[in-house]
Image (cartoon, rainbow over all chains, first blue to last red; front, side, top):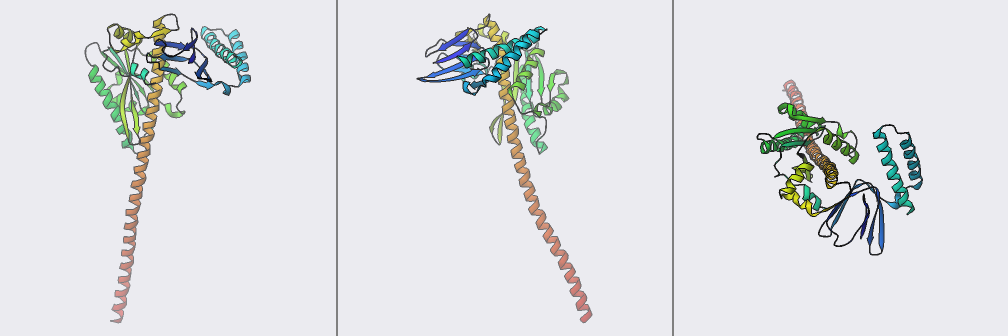
Length: 112
Length: 242
């Protein structure tokens, strides 16, 4: 089973899942193979679940959770929050918001 | 993951009005200029074939050129059709970020029904295949899906996320474009390295052959000169004694 971070929420994919194209948001991808679980933090992308029970997950970057530095995450979160509050144009706001979203997801992933 | 490529990669037969051809080439030549031209020549052959396929009333072809070599060649015959030309891509090592910025630029500035990316696909160090990858705009996909063409398979998929299905498909189409571009640019870089390797190899061999030939000539000339001097000396000596 695979749990993917779709924009509509965490989605579990088992054998025989209906064919789907899902848009992904930054979050944790966890792969359950019997009793082994491997977790990766993925930036956004798309997941394709085909009718023959094959799933293709295409993301820009994927990092195993244990390779993420927690202190950098906190620093990044504080920085982007600050940028968000001092942002003036819509573009700056959007960029800062993306930074906040990704870092919060990272934070959540590390703690959860 | 070849299934998604199958879904989108090979829509060459789809009939569209506005084709934009993205040609990928290198900036610098290889060590032998002919190799460079052979490579670009193949790509241009494809471009021309493409143009023929798509010519007809209402049909438009525009070019987006990546790399100096293609620009130099295409500017001669199709100057007015060139929408965008980008060079100096090879200053930094290839990465997805750079390609996604490029893709963004192209999507924003160029109107298209179908994007045709032309590049050299790497097969082995001595052989590469000029390939064309097609990306259809979301409107064309909708149209084809309704009329029951290959993209009709898309309907069998549920779509999660976003406000509407159209929005997700738009995102998907843009993401797909940058991914396919990245693939194309990588394959092309690989083919270029391969061509460069074989060009370097043949130059080294040619230089080796030349060295051997010249060494022989040098020795022969040196020996001939010595023989001439000896003959002169001996004849002079025998003229004195005899």
